[in-house]
Length: 174
Image (cartoon, rainbow, N blue to C red; front, side):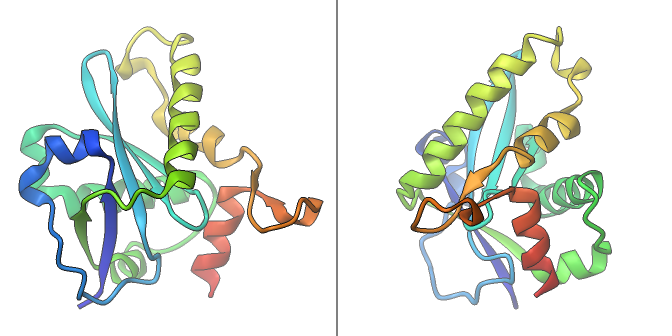
């Protein structure tokens, strides 16, 4: 059985203690590791999932009653965001790539944590354009995050700069 590992931030870890596991012996899915953190919009809890390698983002709002269906909610949000970003992949293939979503404590990936904090600051700036969460086009805002240039690699060559959307598309094509 393929699994997708999601490392949570300390803040999110406190919220979902029951879902956190420390058994690292499960095989990893095609997408590899993700990181998740929590932020609030109008007193609603939103989760920001960021893919470790490509820095691709997915945002969804999750309530406490939704936690039992977190696999389905994550897959749906990822599928909808991929479609919105123009990356075509059928849902059954995505389901095979993801498998079961397993939450782990933080892995102290400072690069991804800093990237997520920057994205949350961008969302804070953009959310002033809209009055409430219901008025915010979450898919569009996430698309904006996925089309901001990022640096992947060791040198500072222009060829090392890319977009999260491009990198996740390459990962799917492999």
